[in-house]
Image (cartoon, rainbow over all chains, first blue to last red; front, side, top):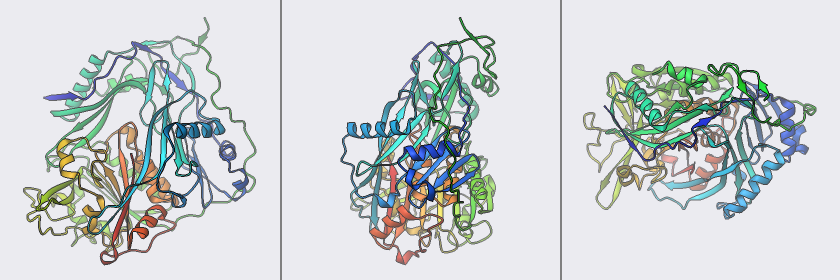
Length: 274
Length: 314
């Protein structure tokens, strides 16, 4: 017997949605070279070591690393080593942080779609001695996470995000982007209701977990974009649930994804599992 | 109405009406490839080992779906970067004896490789002693005939509790052999106080927890550890963290930076933690930010460790 307790329930944000097709990733050393220039490292390019290995192209020197993934087109970079961080506190206001991040992304000329600031995170550091005395928390950067919405639905999952890390002196020190460009889309297709999605979720959990009390911490309808290491051809609507269980000694957290459309690759793959 | 060709692989949509044309997304014009191309310097080869428990038949825990993906991803990425894989032990072949003080240098023991990646269930626990002096320990679950858990301190095998909280006995000594770095990819493996903790009971039990004091009894030559505060997800959306971390550290990128970047998930609320030990506060901070496979800090035995520094993103 499965007992689901919802911290939040999925909302029917839209009754119909399109299935999008992503443009194939076409990255190479030239694209990476141009990004280095735009990131302000044109004068250091001669000194960079270049490597192409297992779907990644990387350019690096002693201070900076810039990598681009050939499957997803995603990029990640560190422009200044953590050890060179001059301060231990980010005093910059959130609005100024957003301005700096957007300005930097404008310089990179990507991503080109509108984006919304979803969250500001901070890289924190503490130190403790052998007796357990903990020092005050230092903050080494602010990591701004931007996401996007396509038509009415948010992009969810490990992709569809840009992160810009800003150091204690308002310098952009690192970042990451998983933001596949859309090529074209289908006509709108009908979506499942939240109730039907929850019913499918219960069936699936019964099969995989068996029974027990489960906490649904997050439940959203959105488009699922995969992570930086993955190739992805289609962007499809889905219901995603973050589910936690409590045990006597250990707890668990899982993510279940239920296709929201009745058609499409995700729906076909899902049909085989329930 | 303009018609576009059908999207390949989308059954049920044979004839799709086009919507407004989407402008090309990448404005980046091709430029000449870099003129001076030199290869990156490689990190000296090391040996790695992996442990995961996906299937629980004996010890009554919930099944895990992506332990193999995490560990296989890490070891595969390390191998692709020129390092060697000493062993992988899965399910009932992974044993708590491979991590215990007396036997971790035997075949497939954690202290026979320089870098170990462990994926299973786990958690930090605490017990209050007189004077609000908390004892915290970490345990992870196995499905072995040798036992159902390992822990940082000795626990009663029936109750999974310390027999004498006033006099805890160390159960693991990591680094007195070859081990320099260990990923403990479980929930609450390097737990920090209330960071990323929603469970009310756990909040009470772990308010005073920090990974330095939890793991201190076990740190005897291991330089750094990597784990999570709060729950970490067992999910396809986050199962790349092993391969991504292995790819970066295998090349020689900074260890702490790589773990905190690659294991962080804003959508799943996974908060990774990297921790280094040091002779002093400054030494621990420096090691945490600088250590990589290209820049290995000197091994510190237990008597030389006086400080722990850890970082996380939240």
